[in-house]
Amino acid sequence: MSTHKHPKSSRPALADSAPPWFAEGVRFTCQPGCRRCCGGAPGDVWVTEAEIAAIAEYMKLAPDEFERSYLRRYASGRASIRERSNGDCVLLDEKGCSVYPARPKQCRDYPFWPEVMATPFAWIAEMNRCPGIGDGELHEAPKIVDLLKTQTED
Ligand code: SF4
Ligand code: SF4
Image (cartoon, rainbow, N blue to C red; front, top):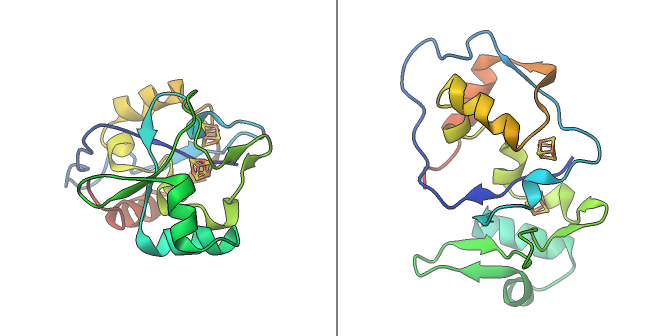
């Protein structure tokens, strides 16, 4: 499994309604060998300072060394992992995510992002990017709702 770049777009909040459209749960299983969500269209892989430190440690680099080589900083101060010219995350290699055990929360949470879970239409539309959506393991609604609550709105 690998994970996911966040498109440069606003993140609509999940409607505060009960029950959610996915009350019966949704199916998702990451597909072996797939890396689509770590590349493709330009996007951001947001990282917190704690995540920067954790990834740098995993790579046996000093945080400032990691920052110089792998991060871009926006005027807001937020940091995102750089991309290659083809849109791939720079931490993606031929085997998948090179920092998988230390990958950012954004990557670990995908596809359970507010904009993807906002409506059934958004969920179905995301199938164009992620072939694991709608397949395999059933993910129960309460856990998804709790996960969404842990995510910071951009
Ligand atoms: S950090 Fe890893 S999981 Fe996240 S987008 Fe980059 S390669 Fe993919
Ligand atoms: S696009 Fe979906 S199936 Fe492919 S690596 Fe990402 S989560 Fe897994």
